[in-house]
Every structure is written in C-alpha cells, then in structure tokens.
Image 1 (cartoon, rainbow, N blue to C red):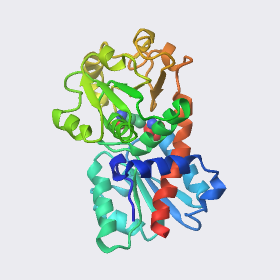
Image 2: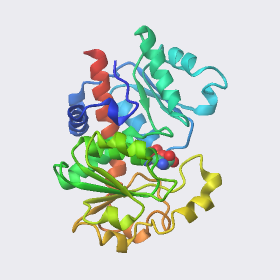
Image 3: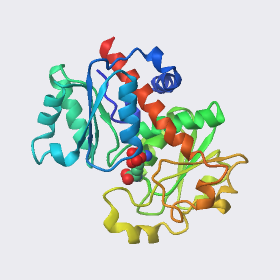
Length: 304
Ligand code: CP
Ligand code: NVA
C-alpha cells in the first residue's frame, strides 16, 4: 500500500508517472474507487483542495465524504488511530488537511500496522503540501516543457508549500533558489537535506534568487493558523513582495506562480498576479488533474 504524505515518498520516475496519469483521459484510469468512499477531513479551510479532491474522487468512480476536523476531533474526541481504523472500514482512501503532520503519519502507521488499511493522503499539513507540488510541477512542465536544468525561485516564507515545491523541483532536476527573511527561512539542516536531491541555494536577498529564474513562486506570508502574527509577519517580509521590478530580474519569459489564496499588495503585486506572466489559474485548475493522477497512482498500487 502507498500513502501520499510527502513528495519524497515518491521517486523521480514515480513523480513523472503521476504527472503522466494527470494528463491521461479520465476514462483510461479505470475507476479505481468504483463503489467506494473517500473520506476528506479538513481541520483548516479550503477552496482548491476540497473541490479538486472531491471531483477527482468522483472522476475515479468513488463517493467523497467531507468532514470538518472538529467533527471527528483528532485526539480530542478520539485518538487519531481510532478515527483512521474506523474510516478504513468505510472508505477506499482517507485524506486529511491537518494542523500537525504527525496526524497523517500516525494515521498511515495505523493503516500499515495490520495490513488491512487504506491509503492516507496529506491534503496540507504544517510541514508539507504534496498535492500542491504535483500541480506545480504539472503546470511548470506544461508551460516550459522539460524541467531539468530550469530554475525555480521561491520568494517568501519557507513553509509547507515551499518545502514540497523545493522537493519536487529538485527531484525533477531543477535548480531551486530560495529567498527568505531570517527566521522564516530553511534551516541549515533543511538545506543539507534538500541538497541530497539536487542544486539548492538560499539567500535573504530576493534579487539573488530571482536573477535569471524561469519561474518565480510565492505563498502567503501568513499561513492558516498564524493569523495572530499577521502584523509582525507582514513587517518581517517587507521587501519580499513579488512585483514587476522583481520579475524584471527573472529570465525573459519567466512565469509567476502562487498556490493561492493570494493577498495582493503583500506577497505579490496585483500587476504581477493578474498580469500576462501569471500562471496561477492554470496552476489552480491543475490541482484537479494532479489530484486525480496522484490518487490513480497510489490506488493502482493497492489493486495491483
Ligand atoms: N492551494 C490550496 O491548497 O488552496 P486551498 O487552501 O483553497 O485548498
Ligand atoms: N502556506 C499556506 C498554504 C495555503 C494553501 C497555508 O498553510 O495556509
């Protein structure tokens, strides 16, 4: 059984296969969830992830069941493991958007313990957002062709989206350039971990990262759950807004990407996100195709 907890659960070849499946006609995927449910549990709000996962489940022949986190109450109403084990009796896959990454790893461990469980999918945790990364890679490949040798610059908070983007980009042979303010950057140990996958460098100066890059990517400065720190975070990120001046340092024809939701005037100017270099709508729409491809891949492993 394969879980989808992090990008690094997959080899570069497996990631390429997921991207291939994402672009296959739906009819060729064989309805691996026929007659089965898919449990989608959200401890945090969502637009893209909920809708793309619900529709991907339908397109794979299954029936999505949405539940808010407070209804199941991970470790408050009952232990994470009990929730996962019970749901595995109703559903062919369990997906969760969680505050703590350990909620999805513990669910996966509970599934693996007796070999009767179902795949667990991480729909965003404090650590990573692998479904976003698959859509990001799909979008970059559609816009630029072969990704090996291209450069992606990430400007902003080194959080869940940045981490998964860095992993998938490096695994696919891209150079990754991070620009993050002190205190919101990748630790030395994290840069060393990423270095095992490829060419990564980090700076506090956005200009260093963006220079000559083929893609400039950012995310909110205030992730879900950090709203109390909004003002201090906005001060810490002054100078990190991706605007036309910053984009002019990137390669000719460079594209702008953002996982969304976006806050115009903070991490990105309206001119850039709503301008001709922006790939954010294709990127958002690709969440559906990437979710379908990724689930088709892990469910193939269940049935094969
Ligand atoms: N990018 C993303 O995960 O969006 P949602 O939070 O709306 O699902
Ligand atoms: N880093 C953001 C991503 C939202 C899709 C968050 O965790 O809120």
